[in-house]
Image 1 (cartoon, rainbow, N blue to C red):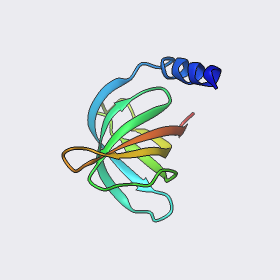
Image 2: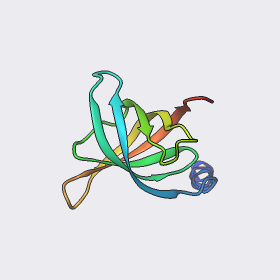
Image 3: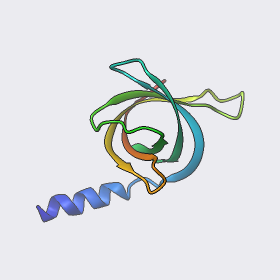
Image 4: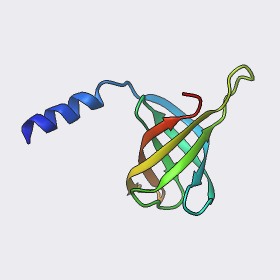
Length: 104
């Protein structure tokens, strides 16, 4: 058990989290519902996303983070929600895992 905790902790430190705070579009796979949200931060393995509504853990979504530069395409991924926590402001923070990145 301890080895898995150490491994989990060390894996979380393999990627630096980049603060983003940019609008992101989410499309829930099962329902095709489109949601506008805020991508709070991004790492090599996941994103933290703030939404107005709760989204269940296990939900898969397509994400599109637009680029501010015409030379670069939007950053598009397939993610799965790993956790959803309500904030003091009544919004929801999603911890997501990136499953695939479009174009890779």
